[in-house]
Length: 293
Image 1 (cartoon, rainbow, N blue to C red):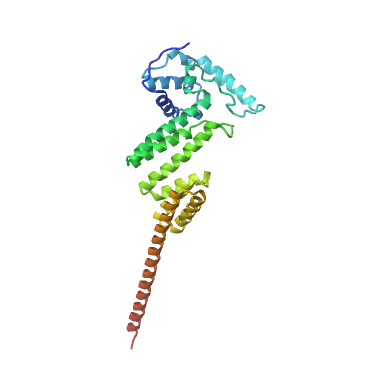
Image 2 (cartoon, rainbow, N blue to C red):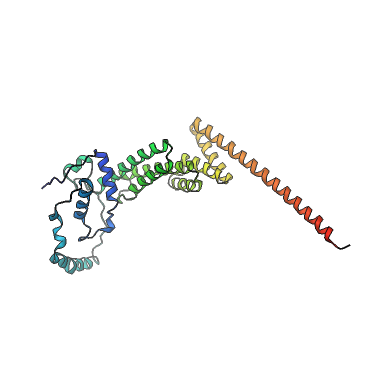
């Protein structure tokens, strides 16, 4: 039986994004059969989307003392006994097609696989919004939006399939988000955080030249000139091998800039050493003058 609760003035993608935002407040480890079950989530979702509650009868059993007594007095003890002989491997979602059923399939939502797809698309949608903010120069707001997109991906259901298409998409989106976060950090002159963010990308994708290039820029502003030069030289070598003339030009420009910084730093060190030597000689002369005749 289907009941009309209300209507939502959102397009399918906006609805997916909203559901993903709300789902983050209901992680699986907070489940409770009497206080926080799927029917509670249904009521929560109805209220958030339509400002109207779900029909009260869907959760009537949670108020029954008899049901609670049977659950805690019988079901739970039996479950604990069965755990000794039954190896429960957890939910694998090997075939969750048609779990959601009905019109939800029109939105591409079907079980855990479906909600994962929702989360990836919500992250992509939020990333697009953040990209616009970044182009307009609103770097703090863009960073917040990128982080929100990262949060969507962090709440995805874990699956056993190593090559699952949705999880592969999520990894690609996550790497793009991290690169964009690093760009925000560079614009905000938060160079230490930019280095940490680029490190996360390079841990997963050692050959990511964009992450290496941005890390090099951050390192150069932190005074880590040798590290910056090493990053730019690797970027330059890869760009030359691939025939990427634009990146070759940019890498050479940055190498020249870092070399200038290194030359200035060495000149300052030499000047400081000379001053220190001069001070030492003056002190020696003063000590001689203080000696008794």
